[in-house]
Amino acid sequence: MRPGRILAGEMKAPDEQATDPRSYEVRTFGCQMNVHDSERLSGLLEDAGYQRAPQGEQADVVVFNTCAVRENADNRLYGNLGMLAPAKAARPGMQIAVGGCLAQKDRSEITRRAPWVDVVFGTHNIGSLPVLLERARHNDEAQVEILESLDVFPSTLPTRRDSAYAAWVSISVGCNNTCTFCIVPSLRGTEKDRRPGDILAEVEALVAEGVLEVTLLGQNVNSYGVEFGDRQAFGKLLRACGAVDGLERVRFTSPHPKDFTDDVIAAMAETPNVMHSLHMPLQSGSDRVLKAMRRSYRRDRYLGILERVRAAMPDAAITTDIIVGFPGETEDDFAQTLEVVRAARFAGAFTFQYSKRPGTPAAELADQLPKAVVQERYQRLVELQDEMSWSESKKLVGQVLDVLVAEGEGRKDGATQRMSGRAPDNRLVHFVPPDVSTGRPRPGDVATVEVTYAAPHHLVCDGPVLGVRRTRAGDAWESRSQQAREPGVLLGMPAMPSVAATAGA
Ligand code: SF4
Image (cartoon, rainbow, N blue to C red; front, top):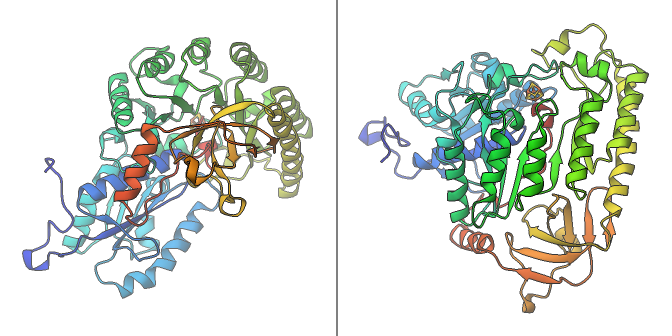
């Protein structure tokens, strides 16, 4: 047993020990950081003897991994907690824990408003969850433990990975920037970088387990190395990933235009397994608004980066985040955002209507815009971006792509009889699989297909599959799904940056 590890039920007197392992469920809100933290929470709980609850069954322990970035996050949390209160009252011994950004922000306010919560833990001490659960049971009293800074880099904690073929690898946590719309720095702290050797050891271990694709994760990957004084550390890390035998696809999120340097472009272009896809948050096309957001690049620098990326990698698919209606944004500022969107030719964009996030400097600004103005601008932006996404996608019709087959990515696959996966540039691809007799690809295998139709947000390949490469990742997926007809296991790949992409750079 790992030193210091506490098993479920360990603090109870022998006659009180539960004979069956206690079950757990982790409910995740928010960004990729939280999705990855939830993999760690699951790993920690399993290491402590808990078992994932079968889908649809009430778990003995329910953990909420919360997000403070989205509007009304607190109402949603308290609503969920309220709905769980009767289940807890009816089930002696059931426990509820709340962690993540909202817990870091609200602290004991959570147990004040929802006294049936047993444990509140923050973003810096997720490793304490099993101990806190046991202490709450033993003392029969809610435990609230929030640390102001990181006690242990979360990647050293046990992890239960959702996917057999694609994995998140954390390279840093926290952020040294102070974007005025963002709550992340006050909840996740300043940037802490993980040592390159530890990152590469994790990548190598993942590849040995069958993983083909890793996504390097940080709030601002381009400032990676600031802690140990190497401004070119991120480019070097990409190149080092290129030397990992068996690793086929390397992605990263999120970069920051302020810190994005040409050595990273060169590393992307010269390292064969680094994919030519880039999610580069723009936020606004107006220099005046960027300044008010405290984003220290300007539109010319942003467009210059895109130009150099495309000169080095003409096939690069570039996506972005844009906020519409930041306080004080004029029609002219917004027109400049539309201009940049036209010039940038984004393959896709996560677009957000600005809304006040309590605790952020922008929430205090006087010139908040009326909802109707924000809504109308948002509509125009979405229409333009859809048009741009579609025209970029259409360029791929007739191209042959290697698709890493995924599970759970094609919501209509059942109805359309197709399978789905990701192209090297991370576009979602739906294709008609070969007959079972000729061998269907498994999630984690690679199918070679020709694009027959392009939609704004996905590609369709309705011709015959040109080839299927069975991979170690497909083998890993197969053995995992055989052993683990275990309930509740999700074998998907990390999704594209989404909901809380504004919480990244
Ligand atoms: Fe840091 Fe990104 Fe938040 Fe800005 S938006 S403060 S770069 S996490």
